Each structure stands twice: as C-alpha cells, then as structure tokens.
Image 1 (cartoon, rainbow, N blue to C red):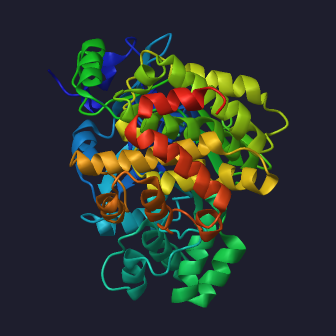
Image 2 (cartoon, rainbow, N blue to C red):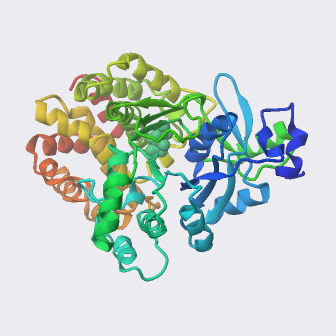
Image 3 (cartoon, protein in one colour):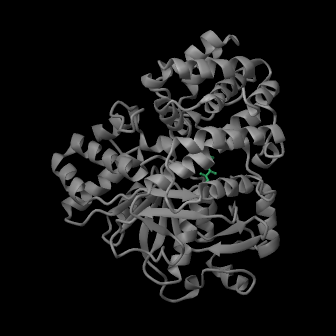
Length: 489
Ligand code: CS2
C-alpha cells in the first residue's frame, strides 16, 4: 500500500478533507513550535491550527519531542501528514497538514534551537504532561529537581522543556528578538502562570537581566483544553488505511467534542484560532477548575476504581450502574459544591454532557492509560476539591474514596508485579511493598508521600479518617465498598 505523504495527498482530494494549502506553490511557513507531539496535541492544537490555516498566515508547526524518536520516525516519511479520525455518533476523517516537521531535541538540537530562536517563530505551544514542568508541591519550579539542576549547570544540551525554552529565550534576548509567546496546553491549574513563573525562576538563577526582560515581556496565557483522545491502536490504523486507501503510520482518534479556552492576552499577530472555534476569555481559571474537577477528577476515579473492579475501558466502566451512580453522587454532593463555576456555564448540563462523552461506544479509552501519573494528576484534579471542601466544612468522603482507590491500585500493581507508570513509581512501589492491608499503617505510609500530599492535608484528621475508612473497605472487597459508597454512607 502506498504511503500518505505530499506526493499521494492529491489523490485523496474529494475522498475526505485534505490540507489543500499543501498543494499550493506558496505553502505556509513555520510560525509555531510545539513541544510534546503526543496524540492530544495532534487531535487538538494541531487540528485548531489546521482550521486556522484556511484563513492564511505563516502558522505551520514544527513539532519537537524532547527525546522520543517515535513520532518523528512515523511522520517524517509522511511529510508530517497524518489522519484525524473523529469517532462519535457520526464518524469522520480528515488529513491534517499543519505539522510541517517533527524534530527530536536530543538528536537534532541545532535545528530545534534554530526554530526556537527564529524571529518568525511567534508561538511555542506545549503538551509536556504535568511532570514536564518540574514543579514542586506548591506549583513552583523545583530547583532541587535533578534535571533542572543539570540544566542550570549549563553543561550540555538542556534536558527539560524549561531549560530548552530558557536557552532559546536567552539567545533571542542576546539577538534583540522579542520573546515568543508560550502557551501551556496541559491539565494543570493556572498552567500559563505556572509556566511563566517557572521560566522566570530559572532565568533568575542564570541571568537576572533576562529574568527582568521576561517578567516584562513574556506572554503566557492560561488555557483550558479538552478533547478525549486515547492512544492510537492497530484497529484505528487498519480503519484509516481502509478509508484512505493509503498507509498512515500514526493516525489519531478522538471524540467529536473539542474545546480550547485561551486567556485573552495574546498579541494581534496570531493564527485565526478564533475562527476555528477557540474561546478567548478574561479569566480562564474558572473554566480550568470546571474541567479539571468535572471531567478529569471523575476520569481518574473511574480509572482507579474501574481497574480494581477489572474493567478495561471507560466505556466498560460506565456500563456499571453502581460505579456510575457513585461517580454522579461524587460530582453532585462533593465536586460541584467545591468551586464556583463560570457564570456562563450551565454546570449541571456540562457535567451530564461529560458523562455522556464517557459513554461514547466508538472511543476505546483504556483506564490503564488514564491511571498513569497519579502522583501528578491527583494534586490537580482531586486534592484541591478536597482542600476546598475541608476549609468550608463540606463533605469529602467520596473524593477520599477516590484517593483510597489510587492507593489500592498501587498496592495491586505491586502485588501483581505490574509496571506503574508514574514519575514517583519507585517511591510509590516502595510504599506499597510495606503495605500489609492494614489501613492504619498503609494510609499513613501513603499520606506521608509529601510530593503528593501537602502537610495541611496529610495532617488533617478528617481527611486521614475519610481515606482510612474507604481504604479499609476497598482493600479487601472493592465491589462491596463501592456499593456502600454509592449509597449514602
Ligand atoms: C485523561 C485526559 O489521561 C487522562 O488523564 O483524563 O487525557 C482527558 O482525556 C483529557 O483531559 C480530556 O480533555
């Protein structure tokens, strides 16, 4: 079967939407560099930019992975082209052309730096996951982080995204070129502010003049990003080859729902993202909170409780009436009262729509994938709601059940001798190795992991006892525990 690339693109015309601008003589030049070319980026920001490119401008994307060669090896023979499959009530396919190249920073550092220091590069967007920002428990740059220390020492190429961005910004400063705008597209509370502060904190260690310049000129909006985009599997590769009649090494699948809210501080010189459906808002925080607490918190809860019950996908778990009742009750009784939703958001409808998205039969989303990086995700998704409810004297039992389920999930990973995907895997598995199924000691061991549980939580008696009660029931009989929690305790 022939390969999807610039030569075979024209043959797809009329079969499905293709990037016609790739067939033009004057192709859009690169104006955006994206760090972390994973599935979510390719189904979300790259799709929005694809729509925006219909309105013109030099906004093609140079995608950069820090170390992994996988995406570059798959897409470079395809001139960066790939297929987006939207799997929902209606299924559709589109060839995306906004990604012009995929580079690997660890192997192609001079090219990456050249892209980042070019005056024509106006934006750097990123999906580097929560751990990629190297932040400590209070959301500040962790200067004791081994890779940050290495990058600060300046010996060799930067290993972290923060180190790479600083190096490029420093070169722009020396060359009197304005800083690019940085746009975090990760599920981090206050993502834009945290990124901006991390870059300035790094610069303060290296050169106070650059730190000062960045604090005056660096634009880093907060964003809320949303679209369920599971990892690509062989089934979708075969499906896409059927539809296109050409081979696509790495197509992307996602649901139809897609949302991007950006803090309204970008310069006028920007891609036509608004025409593509991006919402610009004065205050993104409330949107972020709503999404992290009403989508990502239930997602993580489904992942840990669902895995303990032996389910494989979100769709499977959502077929379990007791589990969905528990999730709905957790949302209504504890999550919704924990924050103030954006005035324009019908929070009840928004939550119902999210649960309907979880029931999408066309999306095979593995719970095990959502379960990755719990030590990074729970402090963004569940612990803030618990802290807010504790401060307001509101209930936390169901949220604490989710935390206890995470602990049991780790204990099970350890006893089944299965891999735990988490930057703190070693520490967490060491804790699990000491667990004997006794809630007194086990919960104390987990809550002592201060990289996850700040002191104000781990020392909070109400929180400890709520996790303890849930863990005690979950560790021996998860299904019975769930039944108990799905009703009122
Ligand atoms: C998921 C998210 O893997 C996960 O942690 O909860 O990737 C989720 O699918 C997206 O945030 C949806 O926008």
